[in-house]
Length: 278
Image (cartoon, rainbow, N blue to C red):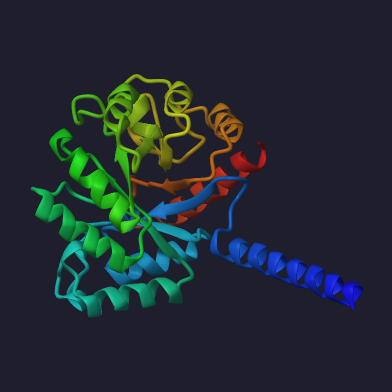
């Protein structure tokens, strides 16, 4: 009897462990440790439904929305942040139909605590796990509290020097201090535009990076196909592997934006190859 009970218990453990691992692999499929996605901003010159369709065609499994996206006539030309519950349900259906999941959203800054709460309410309905933004320092305490309540983390984005108070990793680290739900969204291209070494930036932010924005730029600081510009990606992905980074890397393609599906597909293939090397 004891032997039978032991065998049954072991079989149950094996079954549920296998089932959990399988479901996790479905929910969080990865390439290496990095979860590749695409920022819907890459397709913002396309009709919204078409943008989601193209995202699905790239081969990625994750997308990043943006709150100020004009969703077009099918959604009353509203911005994503103003979508009704019914329209949010339509968006989630579109995402599912095209095999992608919106894990993050780039959001414009809230005006005050009440406005930030509205943003978090919408994010929860969309099902995102983190916001990308550049919040005013006076709002850090309140949004850190909201992030804990809603289960949506804040990843501070870093535009280039002269465009953002957060252009340098040190300013992001200062903002993170004392705020357990706030981390970083490193923008590889903007770091280089600011004259920074992206590998050094990743090292500085080790343990705090929630997501990355992936792009390549040339010597003139113009957006180009990854692997053809000034950024060395091999040491970058080597450092991410060293840190055991398992967050999201969203592809941004900001050239030929009226018809860039081919470029985004090529970028996904390139980054996947780089990740595979490490």
